[in-house]
Length: 343
Image (cartoon, rainbow, N blue to C red; front, side, top):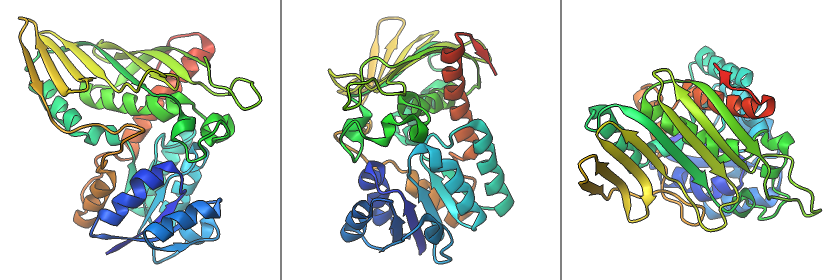
């Protein structure tokens, strides 16, 4: 049995990490920490465990085997590095760090201490996306020509445990990235994995269109972005993210290929739809995808546990997290400079 400690008891822990730890027969939720004690208390009362008084107390508890870092983005790197150096395996939420240098330090800490580091890029584990990977890799549709991917909903303040514009998601000092870090990093990781190539050039527009603090001032972080990505072989696609999709959530990806198109979650009734160049269609109903209103088991916790127990490579490790962060960091840089960024 592996003991788990969780740092941060916000919405992602309430809806995903705590229940998924509780449901895994190989795990015990040993304890949690949150600066708001009431949030920590709510978790241990529903599941199990102790409440730590400080982050350091949790990180340095020799009873823990795994630490889940589910804090505002600013703390992902420092807490993960400290946990790895304390000999713990780490599951860190995305984006994995505030910047690329910090992400590299996390990777080095995992290597130096021979510990597993996994990043919570759960979109790779959605059944329809796994099936899509098989379809694209089989070349059934020929080579990929272009793609479009989008992730938008009504706003982080509606997902956040705070349920108000005072959420840390709207505070650049803690969040570092806005919708790009919350949603864009998911899609950057997903399309990179599905395409099977590195992206090497980006150009983007990142802006604040609508979200405001209670004062009426616009938030100091992005709520919308549209980015153009180019892969090493020349595949070009768009990545759009938004916290202002007031008409409903969207989480769709389309690949346009030589022999047709692959639609993922574009039609709510069909997780996968293949539209062939000859006009024929195939629909594959497989699984579903989480929304802010309805969460489904992500598989992230189970995947890390399997890796630890079987001593196998973590499939979504620090390097994978780094490459997703690299894409969104360069998209933000492109928007700030007005230039196309090559990397």
